[in-house]
Image (cartoon, rainbow, N blue to C red; front, side, top):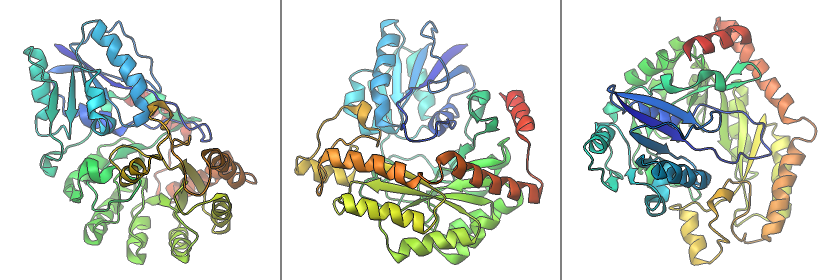
Length: 419
């Protein structure tokens, strides 16, 4: 049987965050496109050791983040020296296609469904691997997207303090928005592409985990569709978190009924729009983690201090502070390149925890200091661990109310049993 080693390179985590590891979503979707005739070995270097003595027929290098590129290059170099062909794909490969193409045998650009990855593997077997397979924006029919292949995961690695981490799943692709720091419009297109709801429900029903993360780019793109999705999720009694959902009273109420207990909400100013949005979520029992971008052109040090005070005032449950980072193919990067404001392209430092450009209203050094200030000041009176415990306590209360709660010991047993 032909063998495939699928590798997800490690990267430097943000030091201010509590360290835990979620099962990566990209690799399990890629694995679903690998035909059954291949034996698949998956290595997530963030939790697994990569054994270079493995001699697969091909290595598939799945890279999501720009900061994974340096390690990805090392992995590719080592396997290629051993005579193993390396094919790279994923978001980071699409953003850095020319560079990645220089250190692997082949790059795959685009989505893998519809037999596309199977064709690449056949080319490997036949000894005619092409340097590039370009399906960029040539999207397969959304109906061809089936359940992710989560059986490749080492389940016992994704546990935090005895509690199994959420499983990731997506109900749609693409995003009709084009936010200035985001590359989603470039990668997945400006067209919203929802999966058939019955297929989403079927996949979620098959996930042996009550806690999920709906990783859709946005659940604010089509009210009719999202209301139908939430209605279909209600009988499953799953508990899920997501990126922003449509700021609409009816939608938020339905999301809570469908099991939403936690939302990542972008907070970009101190307006009543944000204040009221957070209040609506919390009024429906949905926890809020503020996703806060520091270093935009309207911010100086005093603005950041006021922003942190605002977050405490409106009582968001958690906050994640990120430094604006000019990733390739984003609107902000095009502007900064014209203005000669990008300091370097040391991709290992593109973690959103380090300043890699010149801000408009402060020095890079001041922005770095304000990044540290934001984390320290927000969590000064209640540290991350206590805030997370408060959220988790509320989740357990909801699970116990509808009979879906599993004790950590039982959850751990089920994790081992399904690994």
